[in-house]
Image (tube, rainbow, N blue to C red; front, side, top):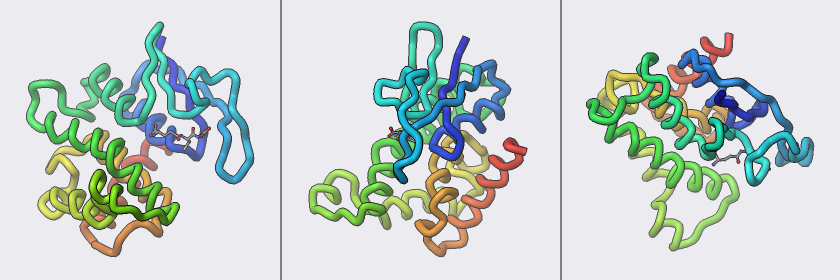
Length: 190
Ligand SMILES: N[C@@H](CCC(=O)N[C@@H](CS)C(=O)NCC(=O)O)C(=O)O
């Protein structure tokens, strides 16, 4: 049996929504986490090596980091069509967005929030405006990151802007995309 360790109002909300969209037979196990405001605390029931969420266990195996969990789940539950499978059109873009989120977007967003700047950051990650430009390239031509096809990559890449709306630039294509993603997620939550 697969189990998703999650905590409400955290990054794991995206994965809980995905589990519901996939109608996946994944047990949802709520745990506490240490919050940045000093509340909460690590939950001994959470097997994540750092006490974080989301964390997905599947028998003897475990997956951490949202991009990896998303890929694991959309491959495991293909009927919902929320991620192109190996060999299908859009697979390359799908993988690229999931890994771009983990490798570039999330670090850049944290660094921006922390107001940290260094030439090594630009060399390795570029910068916030470049990241926004990458997102806008597909969104100027279609409703979703993969063009006409909504995928779990939209859920992952829009998630920080749903939480931190003040980080969202004024661009209408970007704002409309985040709103569309939010509508999909709240429809599932309802
Ligand atoms: N890069 C990870 C981040 C996971 C993460 O930092 N989750 C936070 C909740 S938003 C957490 O569990 N924090 C508890 C802690 O740092 O101990 C992912 O996207 O899955």
